[in-house]
Length: 348
Image (cartoon, rainbow, N blue to C red; front, top):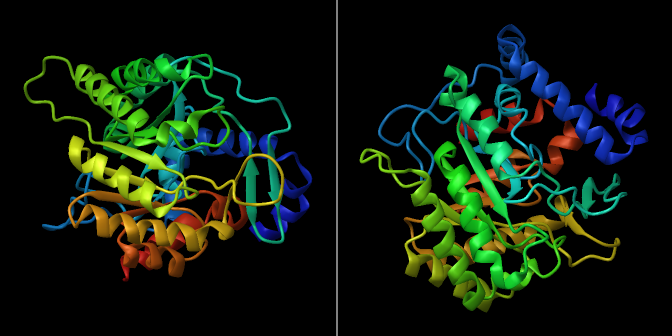
């Protein structure tokens, strides 16, 4: 039914407009408890928190419902967290959020390739800014359902910030947002902010990660009972294996908690911007396998890129991912997709 609706309605709409409408509908459902409960019954289909000694997985707290979360880029401004969770995702990674609010790149900046069920975007971190998103998350956390929600926050460099001032920019975002996050992700791998991917070079990345750690620690204040917010870095699929190993070594050196792999790819011939969806699957799996070998068994690896089915998600877990995330297949397969994937993963 959804695929017919997609062909008749969403496929004829501008992709960005369709995305905004979907976010508004999901957000509205999440704000009304009876509607949220109905969505959980119809689509989340009875997912329950994990229990037992293995309930805490990597950086993720106990009580997590399932293994598949939604990747950054879907809920950029934390406006639909509860509705997204009701659909059957186990966690939400909001963002990418920047220290300075920004409009992003000129439109059009989002395109579909329907035959291969991929998306191409050149969004450029359009978001409301770290201060506003922090206020929204603080209000959400004051609600019982919001306090239970598992929320990661993905932070990026503001476009107006010169590359040599990037560490201070990330420090600001981390300071504002970390206290509201179950984990924090430093994004230096989007292809749509000029020069951003240059920051994946270890010499450039080290001060950024140190600054983000400082900001996250400052976010927790003087509370002696507060645990440090787990910190991860998100990398591109287009790095060569040597660069991936160098970033893994840096993560271990600095005591970071893990890596999110992978972002969108520029290794395509479809036009400007990063490509997501099935073409990314094979490279994403190879990157995750290489990272697990380099990082050892204890670091968290969130596998994302090209997951369309439970079999794809299983492949990421078998390659060494701790958890997985999806986005593009959700657009094409509809609101029943996350619950369906997480139920299949629970039977693994």
